[in-house]
Image (cartoon, rainbow, N blue to C red; front, side):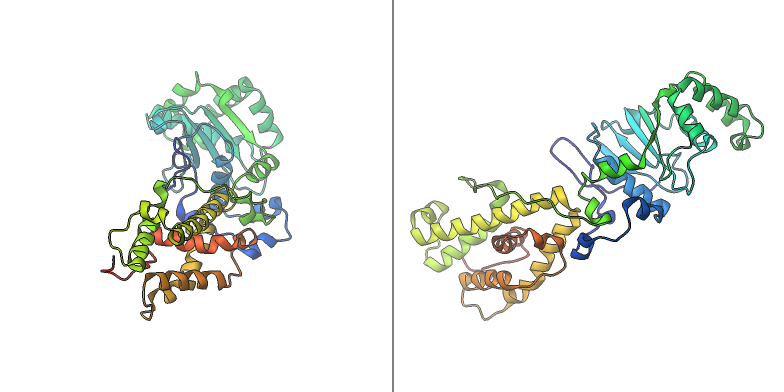
Length: 371
């Protein structure tokens, strides 16, 4: 079982997005897209890539998941991708997505082997019986398996028959394991087993930030930036503190406060312009979160940083306002070619990203020791 590292989405849901190691970055060439259809591209996936793709798809299902995890490797007990409903994890309600990247449709024997693993895990108290269980394969379920899934009684009868078939691969298991499976299988709910259709998966995957990075396409239109909040927000703390140091240094008044900044026309208007650019960049960050993989915005921010850091670290600046102005000018003039977000970013976003970087203390306007 692989260790999962996921990121938070929303205030009351956890670990819905992809682990950082799986996050792609959407580039301009990615938007152009390959000539193959999604179905054709998927045929070339490795089993690991298929599981990552399915995990992406599950994030689009809008189910009541607290966490989505991908398992892989020996000892995973047949749990490839799982959706956990509560913090109780596998001890509470959960759904299973069994991923099979085969060149042919799934046969009943493929399903029976996985069903046996799940029931053995329940019998050995590794987890509770799943709320739902999806077989997910590029070619789908074959006709015979699809018919059984549509008739839970037939699925149960055929599965129990296979457990007693000495020629069944399942019966290569030790007899005590078969007995454990039978104990669960006799009274199990077979209506939980379903098969997912590739066309539906691809259509639903379009609603994720990962689709364009995989298959190419066109970004959604970016909405207008909302008016900046009247009061200072918690998210502004870092860069506002840095600006206040700049204002203290420029005015020669180490006692200057934000209230006094608002009373002086030049400082008030300067602060409003910086806040406007900051919230413009924040709107781009929000757009990116909903439309492209998380790594895409981070990559853009890193590119802006690399484009201005030498200007920021130049020791020829006479004061903080000089450093700030030259960094903002450098950001406005820099050329960015590859990142797909340049299609929708605005001039103010460039300056706003500099303030985001200042929020993270990656850029500093006043030399240490100044007010």
